[in-house]
Length: 398
Image (tube, rainbow, N blue to C red):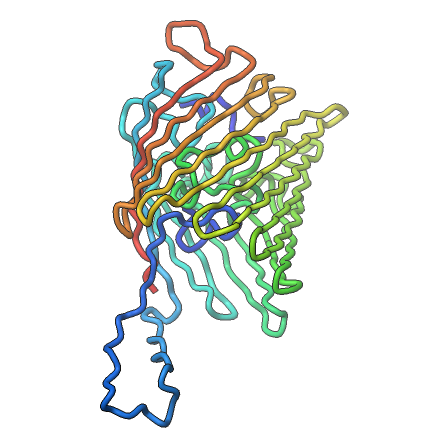
């Protein structure tokens, strides 16, 4: 079960790292590596006969022997037009505070994945880390786990055509967005990301290239957003990604026991995303999710929705992105209230330099029920927020 709204109401995949799970999530402001300028050829000097005249110099050896280090710091300030109680934005997860600048996430990443055996680690602080672990019994008991986003061992068997096997805690393969804001097109996360899918899993996952374009995988994991102690290894995930020159199609299916307690029904999640990449400046995606949580003894709860988003690179430094979506919480299982939701967001992005990105974003959320808090006034059916987010990026150093 997703974290209750009462808890949620109180920033780029790791670079490198989590965004690899979601084909849409790509660092919008990753530093570009440029080749060192070459001295002009001396026409009076004959070419070296031992190699072609246009041969490029060999790449320097890895500075850290295959170890890659990176990090980020993500902060924001939001204004909510409803002036809600406690300045808390409804339905928004990692940017839920209004009126006061907040640290959303500060994170450090270590990756070693260039050999047969490797590791990946993401550790961080901030309200993002607190929220993704808010419903995890293992993280409540062992407070050190609250600072871990991902921690898994990597095994790449030889002569298996690129198969990778990971064991540990890793972000979900579902969804079009990721936890880190700078790896998404918009600063705030979609309703589908916040309410339809899990944040992370603990267990085993595999990925095997079937062809140059098709990769499939299998996962055996615990309950949603649980490191340990809840339906251990009783959930199965099936993943697929088909990459073509102008589009990428990914599909994910998770099934298994997820609700707390020994007697629970199975939860099913179907997630699919089509990412369109017609040229280097314009990209778009469609993300669809459908979930059904079967109750023990009969009956079920469902929630589903769809999102459409697009991003256009205006110049080297400036980009604009827009997202619209609908989400239906048929039984009130996800958000705590039976309702149909709509959301529209427009985001302007400025790449201040290779390590600093700013985003200014307007978002409108609407419900068919009086859901959004307005302080001393009666609840409203809509909410408008204006958010300024700043992300500082370090690395990757390798």
